[in-house]
Image 1 (cartoon, rainbow, N blue to C red):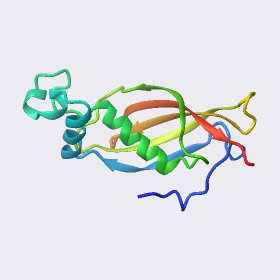
Image 2: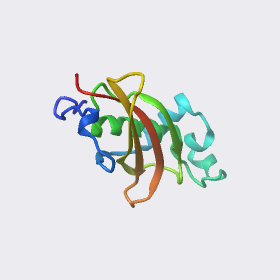
Image 3: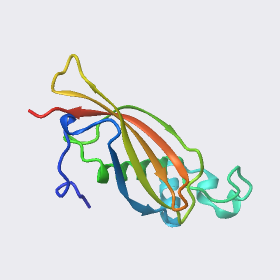
Length: 152
């Protein structure tokens, strides 16, 4: 499922600091959480509701990496940079857990645009992306530096 054809591609010249983007939402279903954890983060607090009660979380929680992967998909759907979203580094934090049934979306803001000195056709776009649940709580803060392209 791609909205890529309906959104115009954005080049560095189209962007400005403070520009905001909002993604569609996604519900973190229990079976999806367990499937992701089973494949990529097989820890008891992501896989077993009963065992998770004795964990730091007190109940089953989604893997932070599942939240990050879902955030990436939502960014692709909402931040149509020309050439795609190619990362050149990032910071990530999870201020609170994502739970089964949470409806998350991503609100992003461009915080910096830097032109490359050595590659005049490109630069870097720094984006602060907050993944937010249905209660307005931030479950992840992701600040990637993304390769951006100038128009030919």
